[in-house]
Length: 365
Image 1 (tube, one colour):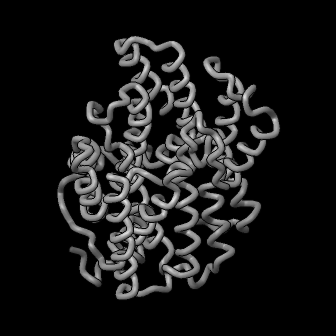
Image 2: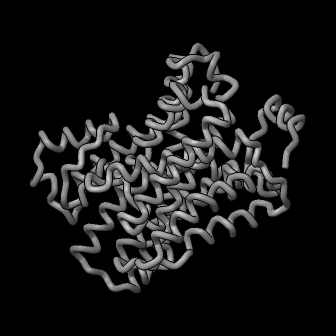
């Protein structure tokens, strides 16, 4: 465990947690594979990656840790407006990019005629709601997702809510006041698990508030890991942490026990992984991989799902053989990783650089 003196040095040097970056990328790839697999194998009990959706809870926990680390000491000085600018510049370009891709695939999907069903007016509303992160669960054909053009945007909606509460309230709370909030979040999450038999909600109109419970607990738990200095020194390294992370997503899906196993993973296991990942020693040979993995994680998360919608209609219309899907899915995942990298390098990074220069007076995040 890091001592108080070491923590002061850590803050002074603003250490970059490369292994946590690497794990973020691994979790993003898991999400992409999970989204394909849940279409290919609709019976979750037979799907080896049925708990891939829990990567979102890991993201929330990791986000709480990173936001607290990056802004706890800066928040009183930068103010609310500057904080919002920083977060918008970091997050929103890919929200818009994902929305544009969602609109394009909505219009050109060769296996769907949904545009003919919804027309110009409603399609425009779907696009605006996606760009401005306004929940609009208007499409039963897409399971009343909050954001029908780019489904993963639901978690960005809750991420924004968490960020707003952070700069207004949470950064001001000391450790003693934060702990009751974490406990309240845990209770809410357990209630959701019992009521819904799992913690996988938050993405649709029918389970909207479940997302609030998920982000309330995991984001504040991540903050608490940082605030209580739960950074556990270890020699697991990047590969060891990957194994521990994947173990959570590979836990067998069981309708009878999900309401127990899933809260255990979210309440205890993911905060532990963040603590271990922050304290793990990185082999220098994995540094570039971790950095690239972290950089590509958010672009991959935000641009992959428009193409998953096409995969969904392809499976529904063509009904391909399982042997074909075992080729289509890996190839699609690989192409999406490459595509995400290109989007990051040639669109997202230049756009963020431009916005920083224009709106932040050359101040860096």
